[in-house]
Length: 294
Image (cartoon, rainbow, N blue to C red; front, side, top):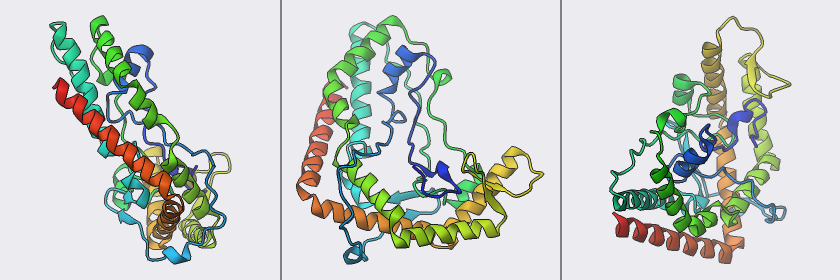
């Protein structure tokens, strides 16, 4: 769900990392890896933003890190798929698996290292330094070749660990208030007058730099080019990122999103408080499991 028609790769897609060849075995490992976070939900569409005026929240802004392409928004304090929950979840799952293996007289599982997280592309690519280094490429999540072979006993321990954490994992995977509010704020930003104006400025800048929208893919591309694919990937990404930043489009879009998110939190205080309480309970649960089995 990218808003920038020149850059539909801007949709928030954290990791499709759990789709591997060794479906059964690797899927069991996947739940215990940081990179294997749930797909970002599009929400249920239950929250109505039609009556929200962002003007009273004009002082609210998003914090953008232009070096690594990350952004801090109001809703990031409460989601269940945040690092505050994810880190103790991973530690707990590792501890459960390794404790099970130890009971069977086996060494701990050889956990793969953590992968670099990608930049935020809700409104298109905007980290110029990232674009200059990688183009539109994203970090690769752990795949089949990164994981050591899984024995029958290891697979049993992964299954046991997942079963013990199943209820909590389902809570994280469920569509919660933050998913609904994220999507509602995003959708409101797209249809707002300021959001449309910001997008139009970025698109005009890209056209002025010789980019045209591919009618089939929606991706930006040069009118004419003799570059190879890698060169074009980086050059086009740099132009798109530069236009998104220098026109102020990306800051405007994220600021509007932050304002709509804040308004939705205020309008749905009970739901926000309940989710924050659930988050605290999950952190406490995963921390206890990790402590008891380490």
